[in-house]
Image (cartoon, rainbow, N blue to C red; front, side, top):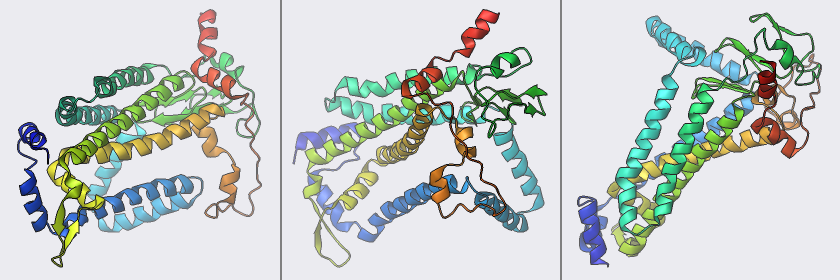
Length: 378
């Protein structure tokens, strides 16, 4: 056992790691069932979250989700007092149906908390262990880029349609007469609806090439800020993944240098057992709870953001928007047994007429032509 390593850890972590002898004694008195509780519960929680996300994505294409929400609402209305129901309805309406800065504040608080924990718990340890400074500083570089494009996404006009630019937007995209009929009008804005546009009920305006309304940036994602949103999402995902990798490398280095994997413990039957991976994770959680919790959080965040990033890049590569994908009649959805169409409904085949190849589609997003036309007009 490396005594220098343990002396260092005792000094740096304020006696959170014991010497090799005390580790061995500690392992003998740990209860195996108690140690496994946390890991099992965490795995159940992770599986539940992933299954819930998948089911929401599938049911959102059908009326099943609406029925489940209505059924859950009726059950809750019989249990929860009316005054609490009114307060919850007002809160949900404020958070999701009005423009507010609640999620922006939450976003910045979470990001600040994660980076504070990374700086306080991981950066110093890894620096003393002679990790490459470039790798340790990479999350901060990604943070700066992320905040720049987060600000640009929030402040850039997404492509608001007004009476002044209505005729200009009508000429940008071709009408397909299926999802976007030619002579449709917005009843709220009293404007002709250009192809690929949609009225946002939260912002109360029509948006050119409307993708979705994002509560995390408190604005719509449209033609003029999609490029900023994609880069923001890319850097946010990359920063979470880099933190997960660095945290994992630190814990692996810790286990390797301290020979924890060679220790033994006494199980419930009094038998000596070699330390396995699950038991080792439990012990690391008890020793470095904040680092392991941070690792679990950024790992889950990396998977969720990575999945959404892949979906957003797929839409960009095929020149689709989230709104068009949601309304479209896709083949995979037709094969899904959950999706059941009414027998009286006549199928309307939607074809994406706006895709003109990968590079052309990406150029349209990252170099939108409409702002330049508008400047010439001015």
